[in-house]
Length: 117
Image (cartoon, rainbow, N blue to C red; front, top):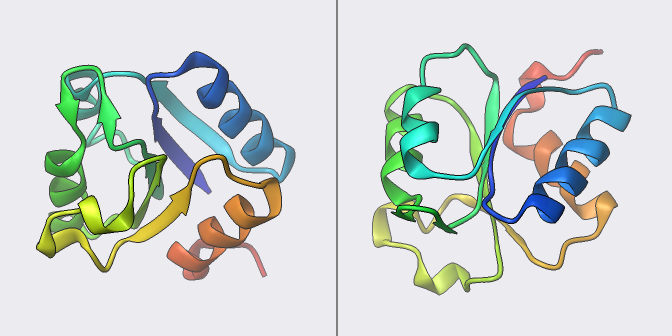
């Protein structure tokens, strides 16, 4: 899968990228701010992993834009799922700190039709 990462902590972004690439996924880009994420919305990725609190604010607008484009995503955050706005409370949520297997299983669940057979 081609994946966009929105994460403002470079160490966490690196870990996410390394884990996903080790499983054969391609990272389209790893961005740290809302402005960068908005610029990449039409870059042709299959799914996205979004930290909630990033440079420029909360990623809820990005999540809504992805929903409008029918692009699956998951939040990867130390926030609580209950902190999500009502419209986003059904979104996949990966709690930080995350375990590698839990991350990979979540990616498989949010975009099962995009995985190779």
